[in-house]
Length: 176
Length: 176
Image 1: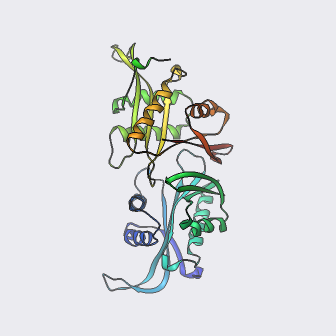
Image 2 (image 1 turned 120 degrees about the vertical axis):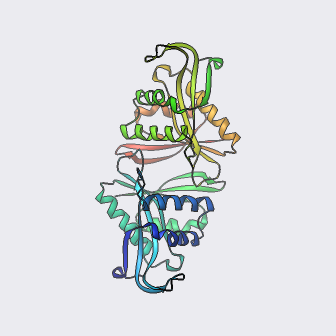
Image 3 (image 1 turned 45 degrees about the horizontal axis):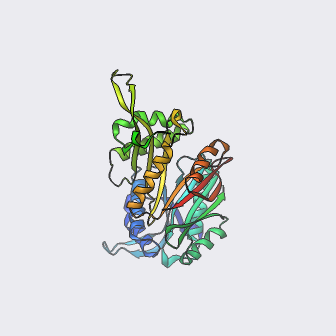
């Protein structure tokens, strides 16, 4: 587990784009078309485009001492994950967790849980009633599905073949 | 019923915005925030904004002879309804029917069915597999719910309290 004192969650900035997209891609969970959407969402949120409802945060680990490949400068903060959520259009108080990703080399260390818990607190502050997460029902996503269940979400629905043939959509909810 | 020969379905244009928004608002089904989204969707599609996935069509009735309030010119075409659909992001071949509205004074004349059937044919041409419609589970929407069932959709899920307290989301599907 990463100690809480070493984990910092802050608003995502446009200069986080490369590392966040690298982390997202390296999870191996997203198709190219999904990566395009992840990038669009990330950039829209980071630039705070008008009418953008996305709220986008990164988790960074402090004191890693990783050296930047391009600049050679030792950086004592390393972006380890990303969460993006927002008020679901046409709803009163329902928030979607659109994206949550953690660096594949840092899984099972509580970073995902910390990001989700952070989103929950933010949503509560914004008078959110309900959190929704949608994910794939394929076996590849079983760790993801378990992660939501372990974090207090319940399965509210399954939409057959939604994402692709043989790829159902699961809808998880959590009361805020 | 409006005779098929009198009903024409064509791409929505930006100069249809006022009549389509009037029709949408006068159904009495949408909150102001939903009207804002309807307008945004309509305009984005009509202007074919980059990366816009919306496909937006109006049904017009010919030969109504209605006189334009501003110009006084008799117009023999009257916009009677609107449908907006598109490929659901992050899916292969799933299409959402985002909006379908018919002039409240012209309900039960087959215009909604014609718009839905048109969307189905277009989606089929685009190799769509699945159509999705989401709507409210409140009793006010019972005619809407019946309309989807009568048109071959089935209820695939109900997300409790999704739109607002006491206002579930129903998810209807139809195989293309």
